Image (cartoon, rainbow, N blue to C red):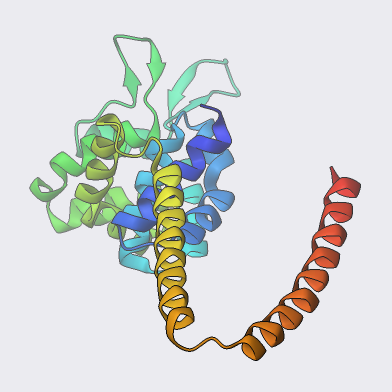
Length: 239
């Protein structure tokens, strides 16, 4: 189960079950993947946040760029240029003082990833005053991304639902299942066409009609053969 297959499954599942298209998932992830990965966010949780934010903003490019900026703002630790000590950034201090959230995981000795911090914050968000929410949101996202930050938090349950679906194994094989449905639908329609053609043939086809049809079929198949040959040559050249 390689990275590309995982992404296709994640994006396809999102497009089929949430208010976002598969293409929009890819667009948003293209803008934000590097920053989110640096922040320790897994691919499935990255897609979960994209889905949650974009359902509100309805702009995949903006959602991706906003997540990239917010991810940078949530880098809660910095190194002092004076003595080399590790210190909290403005957003790290705001999270600790306002929401009582520590960006430093005391058990692992590592900094918490963006999804984990946002998940904790979403749990406490409604208990904060409007002034506290604005101050904390501005410290993390800045004024330019504040609306996107609020959009993500307002729809955080969607992010949680997507992650839960992933944990339940619902995303795995999503693209393959859809492809099978597509092929089944083609097979079904083709069978109906063959049945209808057989019925017509039993009642309407005459000798002259057969000759004419065979002539058309001969020309058509010859043309198709040329197309297939060209296609084969094309793929041989690029492989």
